[in-house]
Every structure is written in C-alpha cells, then in structure tokens.
Image (cartoon, rainbow, N blue to C red; front, top):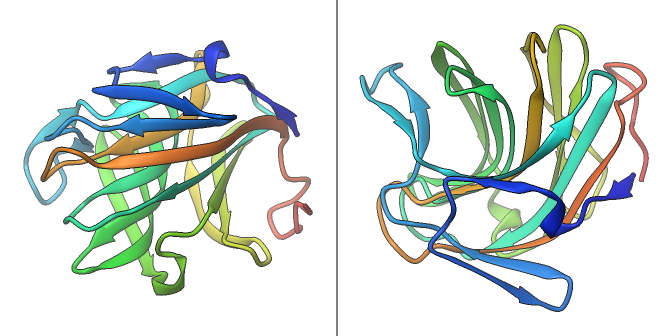
Length: 196
C-alpha cells in the first residue's frame, strides 16, 4: 500500500476543525453532519465530511483512525463515492450505546448493516475497501486479522473518489484522529486474506 498525503486529497464538506499531531490528522465534525438517503428515515443528508482522492477499478483504499465516540450515530471510517446518489461508507458508528462496525451502501437508497464491536472502543481501527468492476468489498480489523464486512454492488461508471469520512448527526464536537490513508491493489479474491 502507498501512503496518500493528507494534502493530496480534497474535502467534501470541510469539517469545523482540522489539525495535525505529528503525522496524525485530527478532525472535528460539524454538528448535524451525516450521509443518508431516504430508507426508513425519509430524509436525505449529504453533509458529512470526507477527505477524498481518486481510486480506480482494481485498487483498494485503507483508512486507520481512533475516535472517542459517545453519542448516537457518531461515526468515522472511509467513504467510496461517485456522487450524492451512489456511495458507500464503512467504519465504526456509535449506535444504541455501543460501537458498531457499520456499512451503509447507497445506490439511490441507503442500506445499513452493522455488528457490535465493543472491544474496538478507543482503539485504532483500519477499514479497507477494494473496488472491482461491479462491487466494493469491505474489510476491517482492530489489531487482529481482517474480517470480511460487506460485499456491495457498486458500478464505477465515472470517476470514483475514496478516503477518510466522519459524521456527527446528533451533536457537535466529535473529534477523530486519522492515523493512515493509503491506496494499493485490490484484494486478489473475495475470500483471500489481503495480508498485512
């Protein structure tokens, strides 16, 4: 994987605060920021923060981060995006009082999956998205081996962007420390371990 510099990507919806602590990017989300389209809730939000760089079919992007989450729907991870109607976000989300590994795949309508990850609270998490001609494969880990989280349809019809993402739908002041942003070859096969 090749590191992507923080200055080599562009913010979609700049956050309220961005700073550096050595090589770590420290970001503060705006209150009421989110990405969602219609399903179950009826609303459309495209106000979350994402630091995006180009990604091609056959490539993967990895984002590592640590966040102190405490409020409903606090979230951080990565986004893969074509436009406001076609995107995927994956990472840790605080829901119902606990951290969850969460993936939202959106093609006109949002589709949400999650699983509880209580031991991930306050630790460095890495999320990886591999882009193929018709899908995004999401894996995640926190110290251990990669876990396959989601395979979602994704048609890379035009330019695709990807990178770190954070949202704070219900409060102000969520701060996330992003420790790594990298791009490299996509996973060689759906059930192959991508390695270190």
